[in-house]
Amino acid sequence: ATGISGNIPVTLDDSFISTLNTKQNKNNTVIMLSLLPGTKIDDLQLLDKPKPQLRVVFSNSQLSNSSMMKVPTPISPEQQAEQRYQEILELLAQNKIREATTNLRLFVGDFPDNLQAREILASLLIKEGRLQKAEEILTIGLDKYNYYIPFVKLKAHVLAKLNKTTEAVELLQNHEANIGPNDIEYAALLAALYQQQGSFIQAAGLYDKLARMQPQRTIWWVGLGVSLESAGQKNAAKEAFQLASKNSDVAPS
Image 1 (cartoon, rainbow, N blue to C red):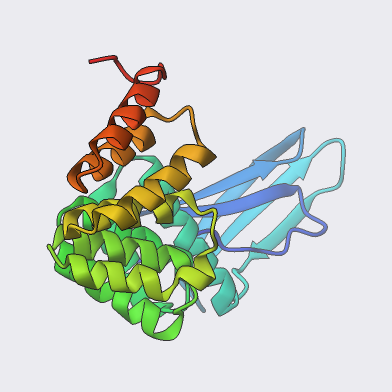
Image 2: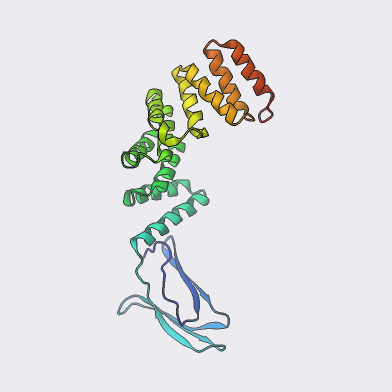
């Protein structure tokens, strides 16, 4: 019934141990020792009294004998938070998405000011289709950190998926000064929302800007053409489609 979160730092001075780490594997606590060359273990005991301890006796013919008690030293709350966060990132790297999402929710509850963890959690919730929960997580973050642009973009995505196009447009417009004029993701999202809203001239303006920033991207020229055509400017739309057809990053069809 023992659980250990992350690695426990210990003092290794004047010992034959180069590193000591612990890892929780289901109901087992795995202790990993890296010993100096030539070291062997003469005795190993788990003692219950006066408190749980690991007693190890080493010998090394190249050095002197060493007998010691290894007792974990306390770690700071910041170190605990970092260990938990790294464990979550490891779960994501192993594609254990459900377990990572659960741990992230607990982590964000304990450390609400960790912006990156909140951002990752919201992204995972969006991918799972849990849009209402993602919106809640992002709204809480924006209430305190309204300058954090990743929250703004993610919430705009959520609002768009919830068919709250007007709210999404207003959210992006309100943060335009903070986002900057050359943010491609922001411009592309707002242009798509303008199209959904029926604001085709505004959408065309943004797609024109994107096409000039990245003329090799066919998608921007197509977006421009669609917006212009929807606005009744067929000749200009035709020109945009002709420019799109000259690019090679998508199939001609």
